[in-house]
Amino acid sequence: MARGRLNSGSKSEAELPKAKLNLESLGRISKLISYLKPYKGKFFAGIIFLFLSSLTGLAFPSLLGALIDAAQGKQKYTFLPPTINAIGFLAFGILFVQAFVSFFRVVWFVQVAEKALADIRRDTYFKLVTLPMNFFANRRVGELNSRISADLSQIQDTMTTTFAEMIRQLVLLVGGITFLTIVSFKLTLALLLMLPVLIVVAVFFGRFIRTLSRQAQDKLAESNTIIEETLQGIANVKAFVNEAFEAGRYNKNLREVVKIAVKGAVYRGLFASFIVFCLFGAIVGVIWYGSVLVHHHELSVGSLTTFILYSIFVGAAMGSFPELYANLQKAVGASERVLEILDEKGEDVSINAEDNLVKQKISGNLAFNNVVFAYPSRSELTVLKDISFTANAGQKVAIVGPSGSGKSTMAALILQFYHPQSGSIYFDGLDSAEYALTDIRNQVAIVPQDVLLFGGTISENITYGKLGSTQEEIIAAAKKANADQFISSFPEGYDTIVGERGVKLSGGQRQRIAIARALLKNPAILILDEATSSLDSESERLVQEALEVLMKGRTSIIIAHRLSTIREADKIIVLEKGNIVETGNHQELIANEHGLYRYLSQLQFETAQAN
Image (cartoon, rainbow, N blue to C red; front, side, top):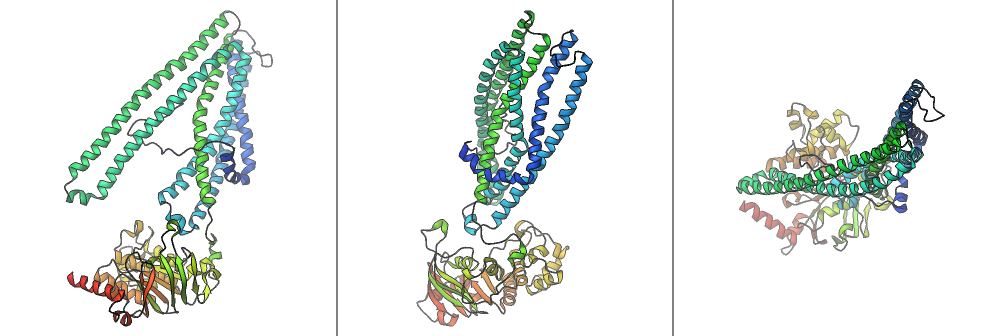
């Protein structure tokens, strides 16, 4: 039966997409069913107990009918005891058996489902964290999070409830119709002519109501978006005096929510009236016809009672199948989306930390040889065109150029987030393909412009560069990064919670935490991706001092926006539209009157003077 909710204030669950049920779709999800194999003993025991529980449940209408007939001095079934007390004790005995098997059936199904689901969650998450960057470039984080939360929760509901309930209702349906036929073929025929019509009408009516419910929830979601946008941009709202506009927009949306909700309530009222009249009308009709048969001595009162109870069993089973089938469709759809992740080809990174330890040392020599690269998601746009350069161990190499020239892309290639379409990247004279991926990433560190800190403590964020570091190592790295002073000023010191994405810290503080993290990692190659471009003068000075410490004795690739920060670089590479247009040190490049580097340098100098 339909359970669509049209109250605009209720929190409706997000409707998950459904998949068509056929041999192909069921075949695709067989991989997930394999997760049940380690627990197949309890699973099959649960299936057996499920059948026993359903079959014992089918015995009660017959026993209750036999009790009523026994009270009138009649014996309904020759295989049952003739006395009331004996039938009553037998009923309680069967009830005890049903309670016993039901307990173990529920516990075993939940144990199997939860353990299997935990295995699926683990493998899905493990696969996610080892997938290449291109996978994440094409998908939103919310969508991927939904795969692990909403989709797997739907699979969980199916494994723990829907699957068992479908078997139970099928047993009750088949068993109920069988017993109905045994009790009275005439009444069964009359009932089976009425029930399907009622159920078909109820199913279609229910779908229509669910559609209206979804429309109401979608409109409510729109109104919530208006609230979110308004509050996030409240400064703009107030600056432009647009409070009235936002209030009007929100009010208009709410009116539409109310309109749809009221329309839904009308149809829901009609649906409720239809169910009350038709369902109870069917029961009254069956009892009426049954009473006629009792009057003509074609049926006993106990048999009529038994028939009515079995009718309720059959009606409830029929009514539950549409919803169970819809849940099964959602589970198949959810399974297909989870399997998409499990079937993706991941990077060569092990979940076992010991397997990722450095096996092949890199001293710091880096070279690009005729590298051509385009992002897989935009293959028609070549970002880097025939790039070649060398950086010797310990050198400071700066990469400069206008926005969109390919500077950050080169950093991503060094970290092996992506691989060039042609050309090669060499570490210590060896092609990057000859190194384990983890060997390269373990010996390359990056300090980005926008530092992402995890929501834990400062200490946890620093030690992310080298898990298992001692407190002394953490403090030493923080001191070198000019971070110890501000960290020590906090009441909780290194145990200070930084907040989501590090929002409780300033930009300069986050940068110095990132530098401390890189110092702890002690990389052979360091990438500084515009690490000081968004800082004020004082923060930039402190960060620059820390960077000088960090760059000492290691190959440093400095992606620079402010050219004043790279004058001491051993080599400066100037990029324009994916091509290297100039190479040299600061003096050599500034002497070229028609060079791009000199033009950019003068432009920044004039801008600084104007400010």
